[in-house]
Image (cartoon, rainbow, N blue to C red; front, side, top):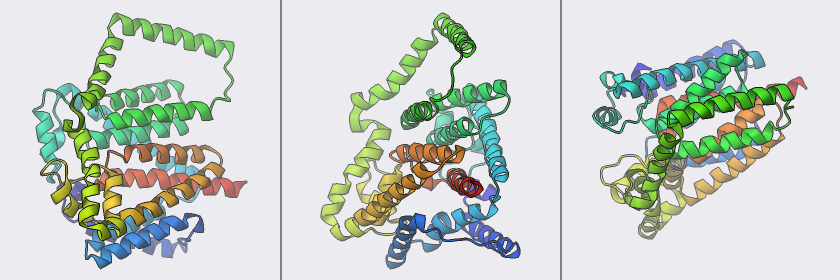
Amino acid sequence: MLSLYTGNGVTPVIVILFFLSALYSLYRKSKLSINLNFLFIYIFLAYYLLLTVIFTQDLLVMTSKFILFPIFVYYIIPKNINGVIRILSIFKSFIGFTAIFGLYEYMQHFNLMVNFVKIDAVKWIQTMNLNSVYYPSSIFLHYTYFAYVLLLAFILVIVIPYKNRVLNLVYKTLIAISIFLPQSRIVWIAFGVILILSFILNRQGILTYRKLSVIVLILIIVVSLCLYFDVFAFISNYISLRFSSLYRYGLADGSLGQRIGTLRNWENYLDSDTIKAIIGSGFGGVNSYLSTYSFFNGYTTADSTVTSFLIDTGVIGLFIFLLSMFQILVIVVKGKGIFRELALYTIVASSIVSLTIDFWANYVILHIFYVVIICAFIGMRLTKQEK
């Protein structure tokens, strides 16, 4: 964890962890099987790797992020349903504590992580600590990353709720409030989509007269309190200000301009370097792209996973990646049980968020994503084997 915040030795740490987990797996005589249901993902990774070698980009960092890291996560996850649920529950609790820290940070308008972070992300924290309009980031270095992790936590508590109803309600409320505070518009949209999707998939629940009465009573109390304290007006203004800036400023809006403006500049890139635009330039190629085609000067990240993949792997690579996503969705739709829901929600939420968040750029976010999605697919496989 220390290396993640200091920027020292992150890749070597991942390589060491990978080999240690591989040795442990050999000791336990467990095997890493190649599942052909994920064929297009393998093809995408092979293509990405080939481009990185051809264009002499950072091969070690690429393999550590996209190959060694997920394999390490796969090795450390227990291969039984109770073990998988236990791992996910630990992450759920961990994110809950970071949400509490985020609330404290928001009330103080100061992130204590500024004293520990030694990488470039500290500049954002320093700026935010002096800003009158405050977006909490907790331990995740940026408000968009924090909001994405909170979204995963909400998915986890939907799929694997706490047995205690009061604790479950408190946790959901904590996460919902925490999602609201960072003001990440794309996460708000993804949050709404997950709520709708969850309602559709779980509509078979029986609503008794007693349950309905309790729900109505709670709604009356909540609405009354919100009206008394003008909460609805506050929320309405809060949200409308975030979205109205998109129409008022257009690409001059910092978030929209860097994401959409930088992506739109790909047309100029296509004209000037057609071959690389089509076949890709390998891992890290987006850095060269940003030096010329970033909408705002001085940015070192595209702030969009889609843009990063398009530049790094070209039109061909992005097409292969979309095929792999379709293949994975087919597997998920055919699955059953809570792990199928977990996989579906995580894929849908991450796909939406990837339009404006480059969560591959942050190892902490990447680790949490890998744990959740790999646990989901291991759980689906174990559920199928039990039947």
